Image (cartoon, rainbow, N blue to C red; front, side):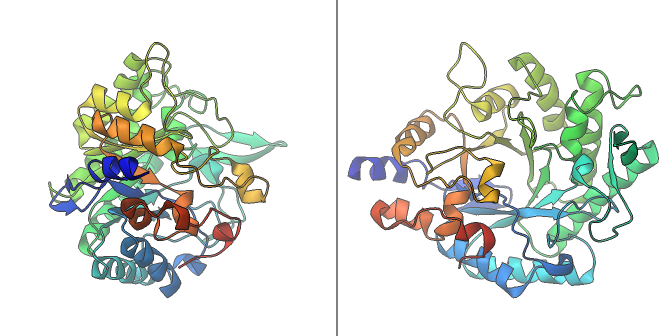
Length: 376
């Protein structure tokens, strides 16, 4: 294990330039929904939760999804908002706590799109929106967005980014993955619009590009924009935005040109190849096609991939470090720049420090308790 620790210290635990900041290492806390912000307001417990991960050695924290100022943006109870005096004051306390611990932090800006149903906060009378109408049992549950709706969401993302910089965050992540709104437009499975926002890849990427451009214009040039995307969807793990590297480039290059600084390529297992005839994963392909920095993610330190069943108490991975050798090798080959760790950090706030020091045996296993509480 000593040899592995030395390799990780020479790769994973090296500094990284991030806009006007320098991250102390390449470990990123992945965004994970926690449902501990009543009325959309992050509490002191939430601030302590993120502070502990900074103290535990994480180089960059990406917050849980935090919904923008749009009536249909939220899809879950007790998740945090990113607008309004009270919510932003709560986030300011989070930022200050993380910075006092020596960490860096960015919010994940979020609109859930077609996932939303009427009955949810903040206004239970409002249903979901997306590229197209969706009916269930003869009832309209998701409304197709008009161009006025699209512009309103663009402006809401820009305002959220502006507020993030104002209250001291170190950048922003735009959530474009996992069957949420931007992904709804990117994926042909949920977007068969007949206007300039549907049809070809170039049309389907138009809305996310407009958001990135608006965010870029709303913040300083050295304020980093991260864009998270995925092939897989919540209800279809085999779904694909792009079937070939060329299709992937046609999606990602316009986003890079619009102002994305870092792409966060969400996969369920980081070690799996994305396309045939190449061992490279989605992050590595993204790096090659865009010449941008990339974050890889997917079951790091665990023996099973992410599954929604875990949140129903059916599937709890245990810690697994065989993949860390693969991780070190790919970092040595500059296959990706940053490494996002998710569930492993829920049960073990000291994960990064313990990996860095080689104290693998003392790392707490991921458990069901971590899904229902904010372990600090």
